[in-house]
Length: 445
Image: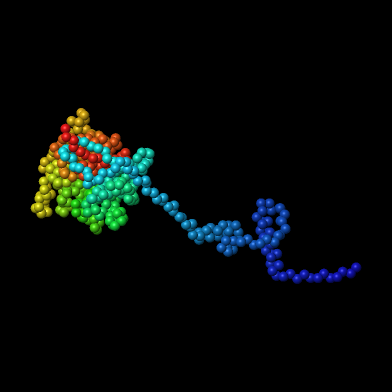
């Protein structure tokens, strides 16, 4: 039988190269096996492994090393901060009763011995203990047509004639004061910051003011609160931070004009002529000279206890409350015009000490109230009101000789704000979240 000679197969170089690669791969896999004697599986045509970044891999160690290097070249993932939620303004206080028409309020015909509750504003914000958020401050516009009420979180502008809410101002306040010219509202905060709001007369609302004043970098260590008061010319704003720093600012530029130190507390009052500031320890500070006159007698006021203080509208007296007494009135002589000397800041020479607590229900000392005891004068300078006397939630009204005229029951919670905008109207507000409007009258016996 004849056989035809076998034909010689021609192999292309690419196929030959692939076979070589497969053989080498099989050898490597066999060499890495835990059982060298195991049979090597038949070579199978597999695609070459893909590698990140086009890396040329040879061994597992080289693979890990090159992967580590590649990871180092990758940019870190972008971290997007979680936005802080913005707190929505709380509901405005609701009005019960009818707010008074100031022009129609009569002046008592004698010492006020009768009182009538006209209306009340009740806040709707809740504190963390599910109790009402305390109302901390209030301020009337110079024409009495508008009122601002504030708690810790919000401030509301309302019409006094209708009780209608006009605007919600962002943030609460520890104290409020409306400038006598009506152009600015100062809000002393609870974070060592004072904000100024500018009155937009055409729109009848406030807009963000020109100034944000940091009264003290360490005010947060002493309770964060700031007391504010405008001078009679509206050109200066005095702030009293709770770390004891008193600063007088130019309201146009925001630049400080004078600075004084007092004990750690925080209440102050301008003299009606705008020449001096009285703090609650009856120190008299003169911004024009930078001098301070201390009282010529011991007041008996604890240095770390908040007290109320108010200068009488006629400029002749200063009333101050205290832990060991209900109130004292000091007669203040006029400012001597003798130039920039110690004599230009006169000291207080006389004092009228009002009813002592020892004569009141056998008490000898009043437990310190953290909220302090606000003091307010009637517009005619004949009567003085003191909050939280004889106890929290009460307002006592005196004449300048120390006679108690009446005590108003304004609730059981401590009071934080007190205002006497008209002789026949007294306003109180406090920790129960209510601002009350009281009509004062005189009833002949």
